[in-house]
Length: 341
Image (cartoon, rainbow, N blue to C red):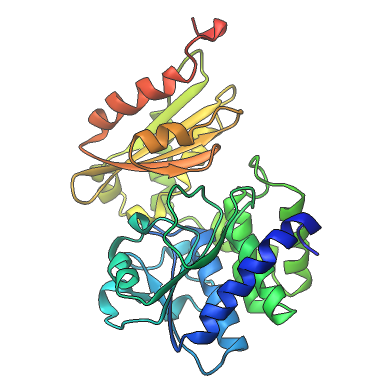
């Protein structure tokens, strides 16, 4: 058993309810959140394969929430070539399956598909404020959505195929920061062990996700590194990339997720912030924490969300305008600290 008995006892009725929805549906759309990361894509692709193996007569489509391509570093994932942009899908599914999200507002173009679906199921590890699903498991203490998909797949199938395991290992590795983040708990390692035993290759994940950066990306990284600024005696660090930076280095927005980890490396930094300008006159912010301070509070105040140690948001405006709003909120987390007074 990958999770403890208490957790499994709670999950089992929800897994059964999800299974009932799948069994009653003929057309199923599976989708992860906008700007998908490794957990979103890996979990989605593994779940799609699982459904098709258990119920081969179902009509299943894997959707991309955005009108965009699969990020380059995740194109190696088995099944990535079958992903369909939500704007190009005009079906009315019997079941819409949300993976790695539980709030419709994070579905971008795919929200319209959810709204015309008969039922909704969810597998997610982000805190949820409002229930929008008929059946699901939302467990914030899970290290990744991939953990929940792995446990559901084993519950339904009793085994994992090598391709499912490869997708789920990418999900787990990326959402735990290569098992360096605070969410890398015992369950995460047990799941990782099961995935490797099922045929997943840690070296392949490392090669494609962490060891295949284009030279232009490395040049952009150097620019971001050179801009790192700190506040609160070095406990808050931030940097940014403008539209001009992305264009001059020919780096798409979808390839920028890892840049926050450059900021996170600063010695003594407890909160890392990375901002990037995105199309539509907006700025997307990524937050990471290396301490017990809950940065998801700030992300929610900015209209976003996430976990206490990893969160994000998107706001209207430019870099300066975003900084003017978010930096005071981050500094307020230290209000009352003797060291910050």
